[in-house]
Length: 44
Image (cartoon, rainbow, N blue to C red; front, side, top):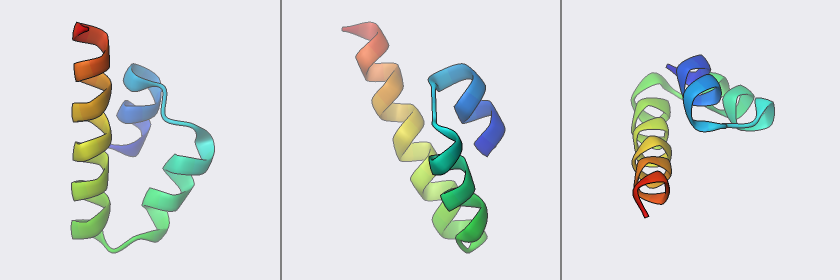
């Protein structure tokens, strides 16, 4: 999921590495929030 957020939504390699260090639930929630923000930006 971190890689998809990077490729499709521009998450930096640093953000992706941070997500990989997080517990799974926390990382999933953080990625989901990141993707939601990027989708909103694209729609504006």
